[in-house]
Image (cartoon, rainbow, N blue to C red; front, side, top):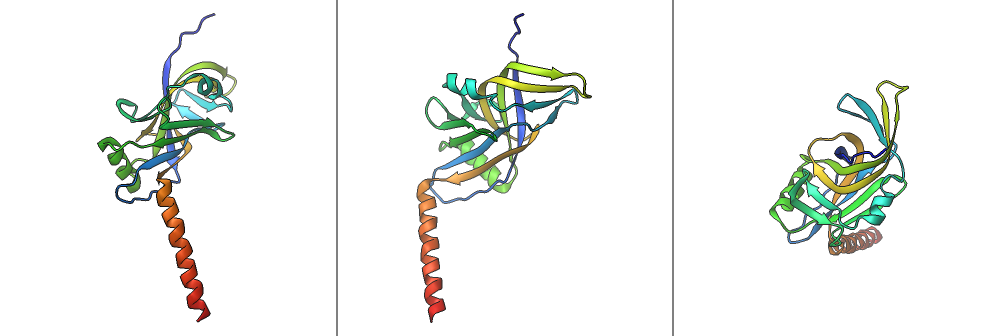
Length: 193
């Protein structure tokens, strides 16, 4: 029996948002676009969970996944093919890291994330393997394998367990560490007097 592929998207709530801003510094977004074994209700029709390993085959075979803003293909934030989007499936879920471009869309997104106005994530996929449990109400769909084609930062969540943070370049992180070290040394000197 051949099952026709049906394009689907899922939206997740992004938690633990933290931002840092410094002028002229490139930024990135990192977190989890999907979390395994996190049950959510889909449109009041059924519950759904994503099984560990669901992204593994797609990540090994698909070298061109895009990171988008609001599922809009005109708003590309990163791409695996260019190396600006990195995806990794780990024990928790689908981890992502996007190096944001210096575009108005990315700057607007960063500003909205810093304010806390946008704090959710989603992903687009085709289901290639699933199981259904109709012995529970509502029915439970377990997604076992997907063909992933995009992840998105969005404004409406379906899953509440994802995480993201807006981070700046390594150079900024190094500057912060140097400053912390200097402040600690100054504090130690003042305590000695």
